Image (cartoon, rainbow, N blue to C red):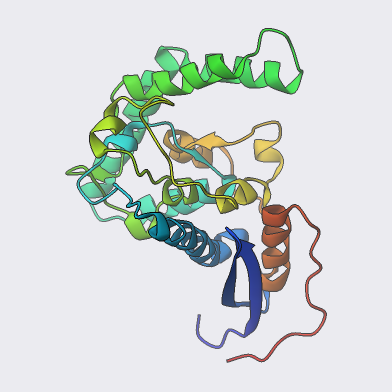
Length: 267
């Protein structure tokens, strides 16, 4: 924004044994976490790129490409921050596209509510949290896989390609495979080989900015985003960009990282 002050600093992480150096420029003033999403997206893409590059020595290529949208029928867990970002993205769309996208969200949510998919998922998550004997990783995987079997595409999927690719959730950025693309329509542990992502910014973002609105939830599903935002006014706190960045990298590395006390040079 015009006349806004910014702070620039350097971050160094180690991914797959290789240093990942990034220069980040963040708002100096307190902001809500949505303002930080482009920076978190930049971080996610950098981690993924380094992970993909680590495969080059083994002559392994990523199978994913535009027009291959089989994975866009999976359940997509997103953070609370991303839910509001996606709602803002849809609200900014012109008509009639906005109404089309809203209907896709509503129809998908209604379908999975009607077949009690969310109930089953919540029951399993509750059992896992309470360490009850009824939970098994296999059952959880089966429930998540059942979502894809319903064949309902992401509301943003157009011609088997993502129509919001620059703004897609972090978890989508981190899902890449090296197995044959044709295997993605019916994925199993035996037929799908994912690109290993050691540091997952998507998981870090689940905790960053989380409010009481999602207390007790491990994540939201993307098809819940518009309904969730409509029912829950934005109550995110404001922090400086440095503090948000420190929180994010602390979650990413599971280490408490203090925010710098002295601002760096501003551009």
